Structures are given as C-alpha cells and as structure tokens.
Image (cartoon, rainbow, N blue to C red):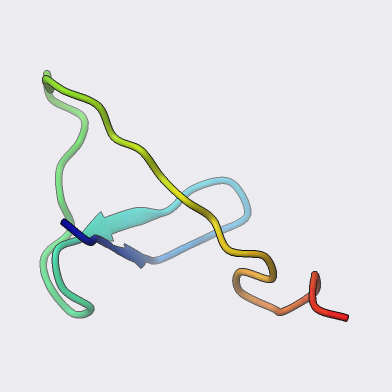
Length: 49
C-alpha cells in the first residue's frame, strides 16, 4: 500500500492514502510496522547534483 506525504516540515510530516485525502491519525494505539523510504532531494532538490 502506498501513502502520500502531506504537510512536510523540517521535522514532521503527515500521511494520507491519496494525494488530497484525509490525514491518517497515527497517535492512537497501532499494531504492525510502518516502513518508510525517503528519496534524495525531498522537497527542495538539494541532494541532486
């Protein structure tokens, strides 16, 4: 399942199931694992040469 990063800041971000969907609440008790992948240059492209 893919998730979309929403409202990213320097230290935080939110996720949703669609690009414009509702933000998922991850503050309540959860089961399972969440694995994230970050691509270089996220946001401003600063890691691209």
